[in-house]
Length: 454
Image (tube, rainbow, N blue to C red):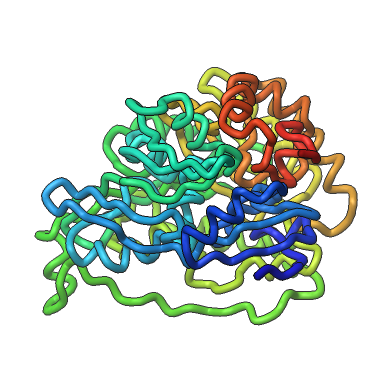
């Protein structure tokens, strides 16, 4: 059964009329795949733009296909279905002393989704993307065939699928290498940077000391304070350090965070340059430079997960998430110009996150490469946001940067092609495994990867 539904990504922009199927059995899903219609898989809908939208065509919802298939407790290798959410993995395996090797800023995403977007986390400078920890995966292709893909088997298809935004087929299952941990706590050092240049220098000095490295950045600061930041550098706490704090509780137990809820979409967003400027001043000054805290993993990795439906804060028109990466040699100049443009335009970003990236992997459409990345958000108040974003795209191109597909909703085809030099190879592999172009999305047609026909 299917239903026609107007649906969006997490940013609620754009919205698309899709024919939505929710499969509960792989046999039913295979029948849907073999039907000659355009379709795209969708996990829990946490990509921001139109990555998992399919205007006028089919969406295949996979969250019911979420079983654990096997676990090697000696090696820490989990095999699970593609619809399994990270939350489900953490809740089951954290008490046993295992954690995800790479995690994005929310645990409400599926394994299939994180592979399709080749997600990164706060530890890319050491651990790379999630694909570095995927041993192999099973891919349901447009012909109905299931292919095993890994670095050794169907190698090219593997690297097209990780970061391939669902266009090569449906990830039925994957084997992932978990990491061992002693506790559910993170040992975090907080270091304040007075400006962007100092933040870069602090990353250079300290990244090698910490598994996790991220900075909150004030995008409205100007002058000598341009890019002022708070670095939050973390490692998994050893049991010896956390046990005295937890008293009778196991070091692998963590209290469930209190959850707020935004029950409705607000008519207009309360987030504007004045409110965010006030928040930024308070937030920056709430940290003591050089302080240390031991906090639970939810507070460090998933602070926004404690606010259910937080995307509704941006109003009914939604918002655009915008994440870029610049190579090391242009990062400081590129981000400096971008921050000057933001402060001059008074387009405040409530969520502004700065990280350093490590080495690029072999994923054909994977986002990260060695350099620095900045993630921003922009409420859609009026149409002037779109020419402004086009100006930012041109700035990113000038400094040889790249935009993250998992968060994009407005990039032009020529911009995309210039930023992703392996696109032609990706299209070649996709045509080999999906010659009729069955797997197609609103994003893939917007960016010229696929066409709106069979």
